Length: 162
Image (cartoon, rainbow, N blue to C red):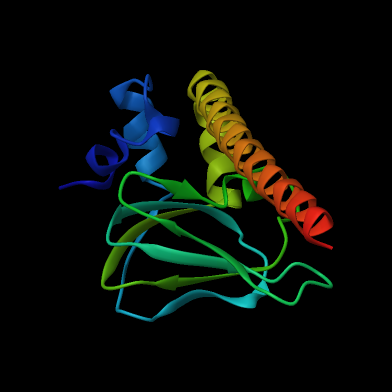
């Protein structure tokens, strides 16, 4: 299947016309990663967006000053490192294939070249990225509220038993 067709189901590509998808696919690099293969080692900043076509990627970050690594799995139909298209790079992360994974990689310079050729498509693509990031932030906020509520409840129980 050509890369432009593989991009179609991703939320960041929904609504793009075929011409824009075909142009975008000219800048996408396809890779197959074996189980445990590193995409980013943890000392690098992602240099573009990653589309997970199949398999899973385990993405980890060790926040500065934290003792534990935070991690999440990114699976088929999901993207990661989208914000690297707009800034020098998000915090250094490690990304490792959890089983054999097929990915498409759109480097920042490729996105910029595509955006110059397909400005309307690029605006829609960016809007979709912002919507996806917003959804993730709301989920994170909900998880943090849950953790904070559990921690507060636990602290309250400890006070009553002392």
